[in-house]
Amino acid sequence: MLSKEQKKMFYSLILLVLLFTNYEVFAQTTTVEQDAKFEQLLNEKRKVNASLTVNDRWKIQIFTGNNENSKKELIAFKRENKDFDATIVFHTPVYKVWVGNYKTRIEAERNLKELKAKYPNAF
Image (cartoon, rainbow, N blue to C red; front, side):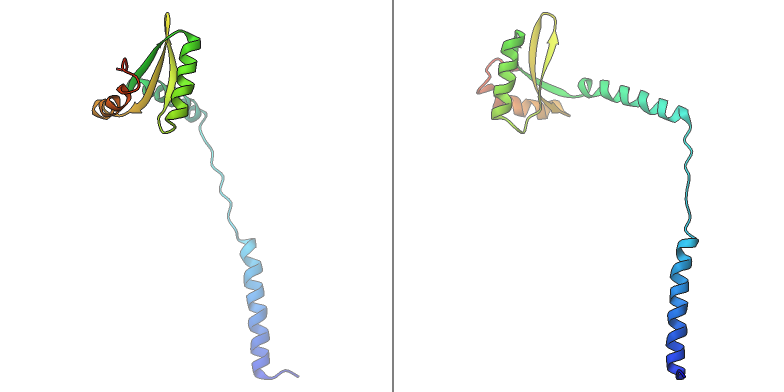
């Protein structure tokens, strides 16, 4: 025979077990339905954003020349300046090495002064 306290503990334990097992039974699931046009609009927005990144930013040009020399210059620049963003851009008939991705002209001009020491033709 169990005492009153033992019965209370026993019933409390049973109650806790039942509560936690029922918790799983009442779990909710959510289904999200997305309109197909949303994905199409999102892709269009990505295309527009990709085209804006070059147009609304300031760059510094440190080199102009042929393909081979511009690649060498880009590699040498990246080796020395790991914090700068740099890329090669082709405008017929020359290749250009552009540095930076500045939001304002003032910010670009500050860095231009530093780069002119090593690249006197930079602009």
